[in-house]
Length: 600
Image (cartoon, rainbow, N blue to C red; front, top):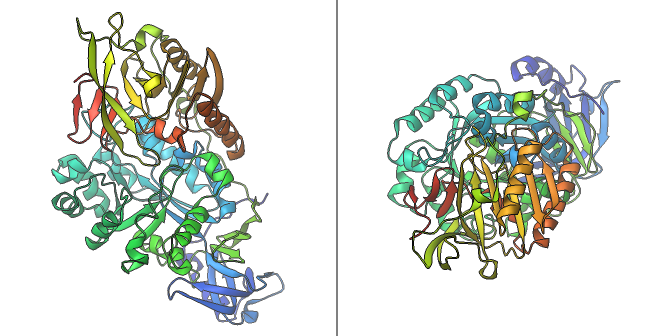
């Protein structure tokens, strides 16, 4: 494979770009006889050539023969469409269970050449140093990976305990790093609405650096609450799930980021604001948010989102704008990327069909990086230290007794609060169930689809375990599943119907340094090792996807029928999205942002 090239800045490259465009110097690359898809004017221009120099577009026109010299590489587009490389406006690399290098290697063949990533998962485990590691590996890649400095670790102060906290001082420090593009999603929306000094200090540090503040408004209040949040500085939001959400955000000057991830299907319900209501599409952006490795390997990345938006009725050129120029403009990079125009980074895809979107040839920074689904460049790895690989600290060997749920003294039955999983959506339901008491215990009830959930503290080795109930997975028989991916505090979530297997699963992850494990009838039937921060693997995406596929099959063998149930499992501790969640401090009512009792 070829080594990656270092991109020149525009001031460094400008003299050469001008010389090539005017015919005084030969280009490095000329693509001939293509259909130029212009996202600035929303038109397709047949029979055009593109000339590239110093990793940037120098000339686009009907004839670039004046740019061709003896050493110029010439590619015949043969009438295919030339579209800009695709941009993911909001995503978390850790959700792919991959490091930035392996994530890039997985998505480049799908045509993704720019990503705006928020590494708040690793921030919760390793703090600012973990963010720096992600940032540094991102800058090593042959495509554009911009890092948003995480804003909320913990995501909800007082309701969870993280491995590390992010402070306004951390944010101010990170704003000077070369790959930092802005502030990651501001999940503590109640803090912004209530003018919390810490949250406003983080936003102020970002705005002082002239960078973009990412949003996360997980509330149905489209009136005063949303207005107050927008006034606080967040410039976008990806938590909308319906047309009214998208319309309300763009009317207030925010970008509506519509996501299609592995478990989030929020494009179809929001894009009607453009396709049916006729709103100006320039503040609508497509993103993935969370994609696991199986989705990346088997279905695609931003090409999958773009195809889906088109299938939902969007004009192909409008949908393309939503994952190219709209995204670049939102982050203040419209003069740098997001279109095929002079001076921009030469990120380009050749495709023979604007609707089916086969990704036939991918060019990034003026160099071929993938052909017909095959990666053609190296994606260098950061030397992850031992400290990043030893993050699961249980403090003791857990036993079945740690997972006993005691009933109130003298009770024959109880009314228990139950977390209700909602398929394909981030929110949960706050359910309740009448449950019997046996020998002073309240046990899960698989016959009624009520499993047990436990949150095991894994950052400081306290040995703490919080137990509760969850419904919606459909588990039957004796089983347990444990994961150190537990958004956002990333303790360990264990769900099961058998206390002994729950203990075995938790201890197994302590042994291997993190990941996901599934147990059935006394045996481990699937394991996905995630040794880096308990979140990621530096193995190739195909290997991780294969292990993840076995994990999904194992969940099904335990009775689960949910689409992408693993993602639902990993979000059960996300204490900033309603209605009911679990943390290391107890059950959290996210409608009131208060801890609540297990038994009513």
